[in-house]
Image 1: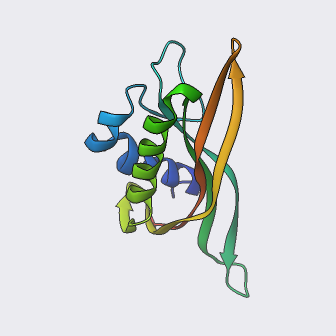
Image 2: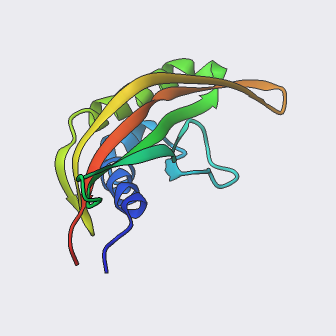
Length: 143
């Protein structure tokens, strides 16, 4: 049985972001898929699926899948310098990823399609999220 492409991309982000010691040093709250557990210190990182598309042959055989992920670093606006450093490191890590093997598949490329900045307020405190929308290009590996 093959591995779903979303699972492949989640494994990719875990492998290159969550398991990265340099990133862990500047993100005391860690890097999380989809949502952050309560009581995590700021800043922290979040990545989550946005949309995607398949590239198929003329007879409908899927060759590639290209999911788009939102990847951002968040924290109180007072931590903007630390957030900017961490989000730049995330970009440095992701933009050099090519030909990465993960369980069930292969990530041929990862690149940022656009920058991202999201303002927010939590308990009356201004928060900011800085990051980008990252396209991954991946293939399943036959089981």
